[in-house]
Structures are given as C-alpha cells and as structure tokens.
Image 1 (cartoon, rainbow, N blue to C red):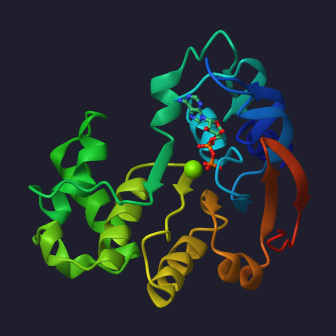
Image 2 (image 1 turned 180 degrees about the vertical axis):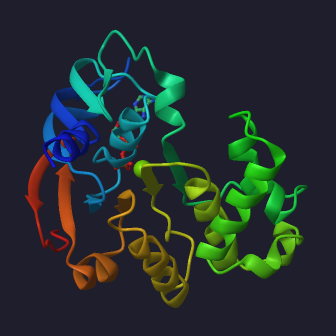
Image 3 (image 1 turned 135 degrees about the horizontal axis):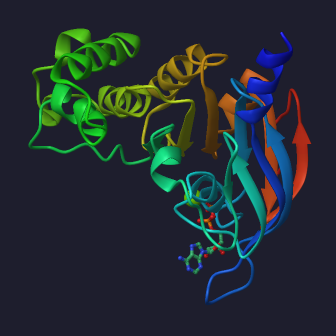
Length: 236
Ligand SMILES: Nc1ncnc2c1ncn2[C@@H]1O[C@H](COP(=O)(O)OP(=O)(O)O)[C@@H](O)[C@H]1O
Ligand SMILES: [Mg+2]
C-alpha cells in the first residue's frame, strides 16, 4: 500500500513557480503552481493567448520554462532542459485541433506510427493498434485512408494514436475546435472513458462541454491561473 501510494505520487504532474517568456513579448505564463494526480481529468480554459498551449508544451518538454520547475512522472524539466526527454515523450500522447493524420497512410499505419519509433515488435504493434482503434470505436476502419473518414472519425484516429502503447498522459489541444457539437460530445465521451486509467488534460474553449462535465477546471488569464476548481465551470 505504502509503495503503491509512493508510485502514485511519483507519477503526478507538478508545476512549481513556472514561468515561460519567449524572446519577444511578455511572459506567456507566469508563476504557475499546480499538481495533477494520475488519472485525473482536467480542463484548461481561458481566452486565446492565455497560455493553454504553452502549458501543454511545457508538460511534454517541447518547451523549457524560463524559471521554475516541472516534474512529470518524476522526470524534471527545468530552465536547463530535460535529461529524459525521450522517456518522457513516450509516456505522453498528443491530440490536436487539426488531427494531424497523414493522408497517404492507412488508419492502421497512422496509429502504428507512434509505436514504430519505440522498437516494438510487429506483433506488439499490431496488438496495441488494434486495441487503441477498438477503444475509439474504429476497429472496422483500419484499412481505410483518412480521406474516407469524417472529421469526428479522424479525431478518433488521433486519440487512438495518442493512447496506443503504454501512455500515462493524454494532452489534447482544443480537440473539438473543428467539430460540430454532436461530434464534439462524442470525442469528449471517448476521452472521459480514459479517466482513471490515464491522466487527461484538455485545453478548450468549449463552454457547453466544460459546464456540463463538471470536472476540474484550471482557468487562465494572461498567463496566470485565476481559478482552479474541482468541479468547475467555464468562467468569462
Ligand atoms: N513561439 C512563441 N514566440 C513568442 N510568443 C509566443 C510563442 N508561442 C506563444 N507565444 C505567446 O504566448 C502567449 C500564450 O500563447 P498560447 O500558450 O499559445 O495561448 P493559448 O493556447 O491559450 O491561445 C501568447 O501571448 C502568445 O502570443
Ligand atoms: Mg492554443
């Protein structure tokens, strides 16, 4: 039990006094302090330019903080950088607003791509891809190409790609931004099913979804956290 608790703590995401300033402009985010436990489902909301994408990129060490320290699964990201970038990124799946699927590859191949870099065996890849496609309800579409799928289905492919393999954390940057309301809900329900198994962090503008789901909501304004609530709502 004690060991299990320790494991849990080590897998959290911690931001301690984190600021990021780019070469031009004022700070993108300023003195952020928050922790996200394993398996939590969190929305990051705030107007355009508030710093949502910056936070997701800091978690995945695509950016290094200007000051402060981040810990993800006990891996440290500091102004000096991150010594275990590759290990860290293998634990993180990304979902984007514009899906970012490759049009000349099949659905199966698109999902398999994220696994091939990890030197898995062909058999392991096949099992993981099929499992991920089943989770998002696309088991029967693996041989099709992206042009043959709807926008909602393409976003489900992107989620499958993000969860395939042994990932702990799913980061989604405005994943429903290009979808109609019904399809957006479908995508959210798929992400919600992962709650508890994976840590899910979603940057979004979708007021209706945030207000109905009553999950933790971290609200940003001009790079600062103005509220962080357990069963939050979208604040304007
Ligand atoms: N590469 C960059 N260079 C300079 N400024 C940037 C860069 N990326 C983001 N910013 C600035 O940082 C702030 C936060 O941006 P971002 O995290 O993308 O906000 P959001 O995702 O909430 O719209 C904005 O003012 C944006 O212009
Ligand atoms: Mg953004």
